[in-house]
Length: 245
Ligand SMILES: [Zn+2]
Image (cartoon, rainbow, N blue to C red; front, side, top):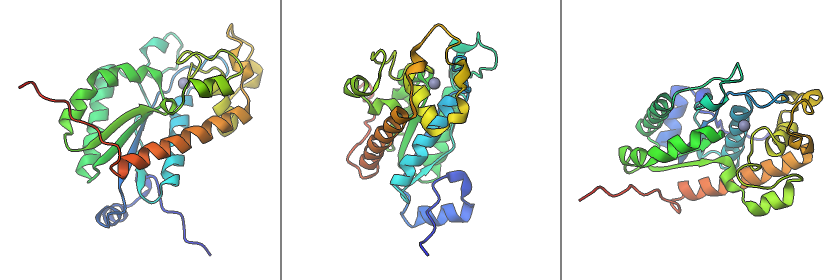
């Protein structure tokens, strides 16, 4: 019988288990996923961004087990631009940034010095990027990173895998189009209503396939695991911005 897989989710550990793993030096970093629950056109469930970034971060933590934990993060994001479609949840930017800061602070106080915030929703990017210097100053001494999971992909990937338009970021990641729909078809197909794909002006989601989604997921998790590996091994350091003299 093989040994049980090490737990990768913070919330599944008891306080003793967490304490002992941190004290042993085994835990080298944590991933904080952030996303959105928002409309994803007519054919995809609103949880898409949260579900996808959750799966990506878990897959990365598994690849790096037992050194990395996933802190269940922020399922709700900055989605004011989608509020015309009822059901979308949104946080105001100040709320989102305050909660994200408190979550990072909690993980710093738990002992983590390598923390990667992994984003799954486009609307979160500008507010986080615009204030990231302030996070780096507040958590000086922590190797702290923010990236969206599709930042691991480039134009060459878009050219190779997308069947329709290949612009970045309009089509990769896009919004509920070929890229996101492919990942859903590969990993959580129950979220895609095949009969509704054609019920909208944009024909792009109709090009999505599960095979394409599997390939996206493999590339993303492999490259993100490399990025996180470099962070926890010290090969990739965030830099505190200088203060004015
Ligand atoms: Zn999305």
